[in-house]
Length: 411
Image (tube, rainbow, N blue to C red; front, side, top):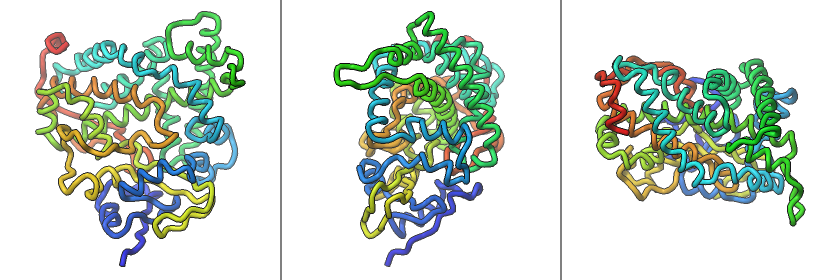
């Protein structure tokens, strides 16, 4: 007879990717947690993400942490993650043109040049603090490129984004003063950028969204973006786009350095960059759970979820479920028939900017593998809790030094 395990996702020392979760998955397809139930198996998890009897559920996150008012709580309820129904669909339609695959794919050479520039800065030393010297500037400068912001302003944008990124952490209540200060700073900065684009349009994402704000209702009567919606969307994009990519790049290096044969393979076959991104996000995702809230009473395979009940789909647990990934579900970038992971969410709330993240990481990882093929961790580093959104705070790496001009040969 199966039992219902308890997993303490609110404990900062709990590893949501660890053996206790795997053991719980063997016992049952779900577990109890301080944040509602957790789904542990692939079939049930992917089905729930598409189930229209559930909505995103992220709007409840502030209240779950005892935060019931204030500027961050209000802003959080207005982000694309939190809104539902016709407002959510309208926002996705209006924001969608800024994330067209053709537009992002055309930027691939710029992503490659930036990655090589950053690697040139430490290649001859044979050591790097990966977060501060690569992952953060790479993700932040790409964000500035997308938004049309001055490249030299990336450190300030990154600082705000880093503090605002604590919104996703399980210490959110403790971090609230820093989160709200960052929200104020980033919102003020974005408002200045919007005013500048209204006066002087550019060929960038902000101008695309400003134009969606400035248009009249369409033939179907659909309203354009309001000024508040525009501001909320751009601030959310600025922090989410930087923070998640930075964290996922660090987790990718952690995974690859634990599998040096795969790292060497990626260096030899850079065309596997896209597959490498998918495989990393399957086994070591920065978004460790995806939240859903029942909008009616729901019965799921013996589990009764009342209206308003919260369910977390654990990304790593379902991504490594042997029932769907096979008994040999170890990290392997050559496997092409894995079921789709949940690292970008699922259903109608699938991440709008997924192609940006997929493209910039698929560019960076092969170049890193080619230019530091024997890389190893240089000590344990410092890491966020492996619950909520996770990733490295510091991740020192050492490798055999290479010539500064090696990027030209790889270019």
